Image (cartoon, helix red, strand yellow):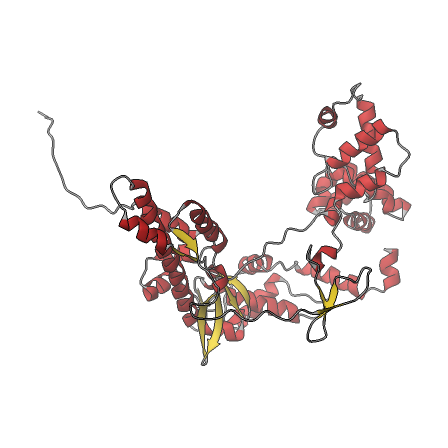
Length: 476
């Protein structure tokens, strides 16, 4: 018969403390995010203070530069001067010279400027202005017209026909195609720009009824459904492709995400060395005055301050350990990728996380976190540390080659191909095989797409258009 019993066993199991879990999370952050965490700690922890980059104790501050001679007289040049080297400088205390640069105009401001010079009533101008302000970055109106009217709270409430008239007034403005509610309407608004009447009429039919086939570039099916010759349909489709499906982009401010490298590769005595970029290191230290006062008058009533002191010491230690690990990993990478810095992507070697982990003396997961969102500045460009890791692909000679090197070879082949005779993916695979690199055609296609290289057909068409005389291109 079965019976119930209790047993006590002892097992060893690794467990991460909350502080260790936080250290792992901070190690995976980018330098910008980590700097923000340190700034937040400076604002909340009394035992932390920013380091002063001023002169060291015992040093004297440098003498201030002599004042530059100012232009005499009044007028627009009264804030300009000449420095000691005879160069013109701007010395306005209220701003910099960059404040005088022209600011890009937004799409809404561009449309409102056109509406303000049109002979419209106050109500019509208000409705049209609300339409212009409701457009997204692409220049589309993606919300119902009734919602635009509800936000205005006009009395009496606008009728549907009145809203539609306001929308048509905005759609008549420049750029053409603005205030459309979908892609088909956006392209239809730009059809009058097609000079040829027959091509314009055929383009209107394609945009209205066969936009899916146009997007799929299925010209054969499109010509069969329209009952027309393939070259006639191709001319109409080419005219449609010259239209702008996102008219608002030309007035939108481009978002540029700047990358600050964490380490810099420098050549010292013939060897590449990883140097920490001091600009990304948060300058923080313990406030010794507060620490001494706390330890002098410490008692059991200041448990919260004691926790703050421990947190401050841990933060300073974490900053040092974080960047020390980053430099160690970067140095180990450079040790194995010396040829990449000298010869480029074709000299990239296969590299695994395990190799770097054994070199640095940490776990592979730590190397994975260190290489995430960390960048290195090299003579070949700024790369994420993960860029240097890749699996090895076997070659005909029995060695290994990095996929990055193969992509570099493909890019060079395409750059050196004859004009008008582009290499297909099959041709590239054959040339790689002649060099001892057995790469499948589908792998070549994947690498070509990663390099953002157009297929052979489109490269051939682009070469033919470039060789066509200007008069013929304008006529087309």
